[in-house]
Length: 297
Ligand code: ASE
Image (tube, rainbow, N blue to C red; front, top):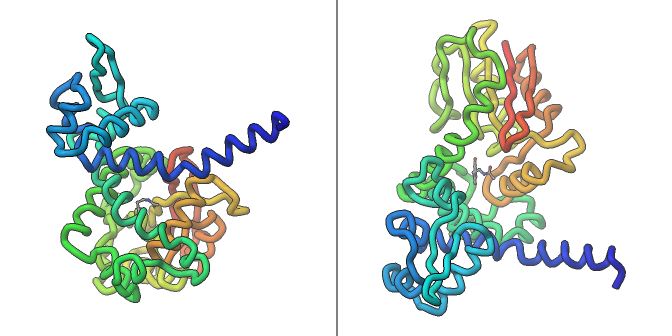
């Protein structure tokens, strides 16, 4: 094989195995590996297996994959392997970590991953896969996403965890000092009346909905506020040709399998805002997952 072929084959294999990497991290998190190692450092695989009620065979493999993924560190002492959390795990993977993403991982593992099992059907049909995955009709997206108290809490906590890391960048992207009364839109915003405010924050709302519903919501906001009022949209922006960044493309595909929306380009958002009557439109790429748009009446 040529060098180019070798590189292609190695990339090809990374793509094939990508899902295994996600699932190993989800599983270690769900079983409580990182939480246990946060309270007690330097444990052997058999102690960890016993405490967490798993097989020895499975746990040893799981721990060693986590070491290779740099989620755990290992030290040899008297011929025995002692495991501890790597920095990444301490920060993001423990329940009590300062930047914990624990609930988001749980959500990705239980809900998102299950829906992605039906990506083929989602592409064929062009719609989300709640019915196939959970037997839930998805004509009411709120009903599907918030289908139980447990599911709602996991989702909300997960979104909050992402916000705790990415919130600052999007909130500081624009000078928001002219706005005194700020309203963070959530809940059932299609049915509930929109209160008057200077600035409305729509964080990861528009990407859940098809164009017509987005315009309807933006029109309702437009009518509720005075000239000069603003809307701050927090979403991941697609490149104008929609061929990147990869994270935004994958999130857009996630919106296909889980919602009735998609991720959009700045031009697509501009069109929605223009249809709703807004005059002024600016956007800023943050270089992180989420970007910011500020539109004004
Ligand atoms: C939504 C956000 C998410 C709807 C479904 C979702 C997330 C996962 N599934 O509004 C969290 C953020 N991740 C993505 C892909 O946006």
